[in-house]
Amino acid sequence: MFSWWENLSFLWVYMGVLWPIPLLMFWLFRHRRKQMSQTKPIFIPGYMNMSQTSVGGSEQRSLWLRWVLFLAIWSGLIFAMMRPTFYGEAIALPQEGRDMFIAVDLSGSMQTQDMEVGGQAVDRLVMVKHVLSDFIGQRVGDRLGLILFADTAYLQAPLTFDRATVQTLLDDTVLGLVGESTAIGDAIGLAAKRLQGRKVSKKVLILLTDGQNTAGNITPEQALELAIAENLTIYPIGVGADRMIVNSLFGQRAVNPSAELDEVLLTRIANDTGGQYFRARDTQELQQIYAILNRIEPVIDESQTIRPQRSLFYYGIVFALTHLIIWWCLATCQRQFRWRLPV
Image 1 (spheres, helix red, strand yellow):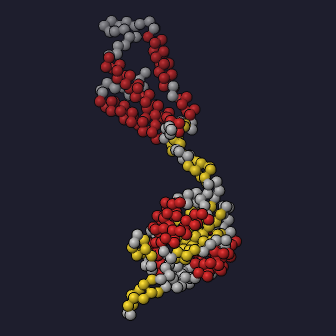
Image 2 (cartoon, rainbow, N blue to C red):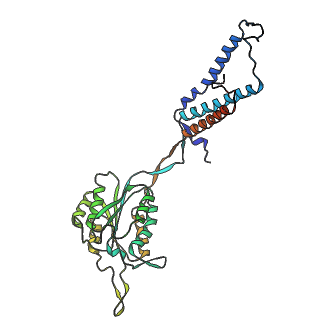
């Protein structure tokens, strides 16, 4: 059973030896006062004995109340100085590392509405976002990154374990953000560059596109050489239906909306990098592809753990300040309050 106290630790526990100091000072002052009271009394005609003091019941109670408040303030400060730290439940970490980039095509053809999600016709980008969300959520232990490409490629999300952030950045993606063309070579080259020199067990690029390379600063062949040099495994996915009914002047007719998809190039990229080419003609096929990828590139076994830490020193500060405010309120409400330690 999870116990709160078992997960509380003090980094500077030795600071606790300071707590008895006020008690020791109180005892010394009382002992000194007792010794002074045992000296020979001085009598002055018409006045009380100077060695005797009389304290009323209400003042005595006020004295003890102030002493309790002082101990509370001191205890709060000692608690803060001991640096209390709460350790949360253990979180599993991967035993080995894997870097995985997801490159999404934002060219103009991705707005073709030849896909369905929930029985409604949607464009290709909406379908990719819909299916990718489940895939991203399952990649526990992998460092994920997001690349968007059209006229050129740019890094939308660097490699991170924060899958929620990658998902949010993907959801915020819109068509036309980086142009209308398709720079497949730039996307592969950017992934290879970002993975250059990283010492991990596996480097993976999932490339989603619906066309052919029509733009970019480097050719797919040049980018392929970079990917091979970095041991980057590429899994290209061709997105788009093979048949679509459109309206024309002569009525409805069937067309192939994926006629420009360069499957020869994508297949060669996959084969040369040790990956596999997939074809996603609808939402179901893309979901099946991600299931296959989860088998080909399984989530890394988790054997190492880390416990998140949360510092609790501010509780002691708040506790001390609260009792200090109470002390101040008593001082303003009692006319006979003396600003001194209650000894």
